Length: 316
Ligand code: AMP
Ligand code: ZN
Image (cartoon, rainbow, N blue to C red; front, side, top):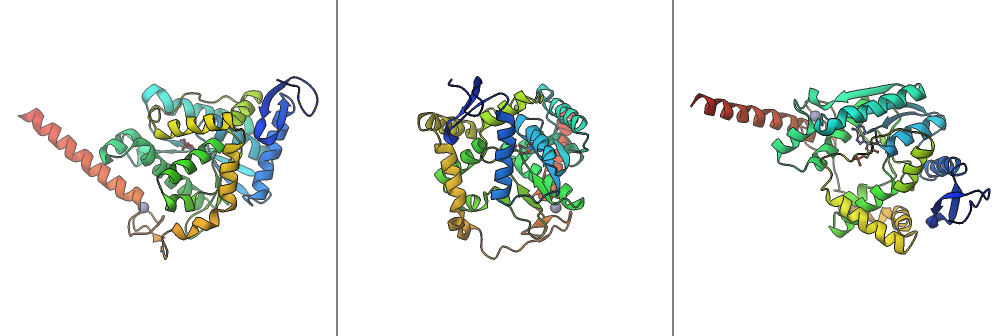
């Protein structure tokens, strides 16, 4: 690789889409600067705001917590313990979040899914007959909003990177999910009962966040969630990377141009959608009971029916 564009030392990364080659010393400050630029460009956060950073224990969200803290935001971490026992996934990820909290001297809130779904997300998704990832996504969004709302945070920040965002966009375009496309944005403004949601790394590739974590000595869980190994998104992500390898910058252009023109899709959001507080938990919903509370009831019912059946078989 040719030398660093800024200082001439040995380069460690070639950001071809930005026409930038950097060494191990010049890359981290540039990464922070580019994050700050995205925050300003998309009007994600105002100086000093109270931000709830959703941390999974992975490289993206832990780097995000580090960077937002460095930029002077008043940050608190939120770890959602999904109750994934396989490979000690949840307990290991939690440990990485706790370590970052200690390093930054910031608080980490922990919510345990098992308080609502007795045996965690894997069993609940199975009982609901739903793909683990989509069920898990709903549950995570619910807790993020609930904690942020109850505790008066200005915004929730997640570590979604360019690869995540471009992959979601590609999948939604290919499957014609126009309603989802209309809701995909670097910043989702606050509205009745929903706290603002921001994705400050939406223009950083996964390779960049991984390198930043590595250079800053951030320890994170490297394993993928055991339930996501067969997720279709990994296939699409790989295809996008192959396109980007052949035609550098395509991924960033695909996403950035979409964001620039996303108002064209706004008509795809169900018109006249009225939100009111869920009768059980108070979170915003279009019906009377929110999706989370409905799932909670159904899982409890299906579980006890299953247990009854197993019990009666045992008596036969
Ligand atoms: P994922 O949905 O796993 O692709 O993660 C996207 C983002 O959601 C991460 O960068 C985090 O900000 C957030 N997130 C994922 N899992 C958790 C978790 N268990 N607790 C808190 N935040 C999470
Ligand atoms: Zn509810």
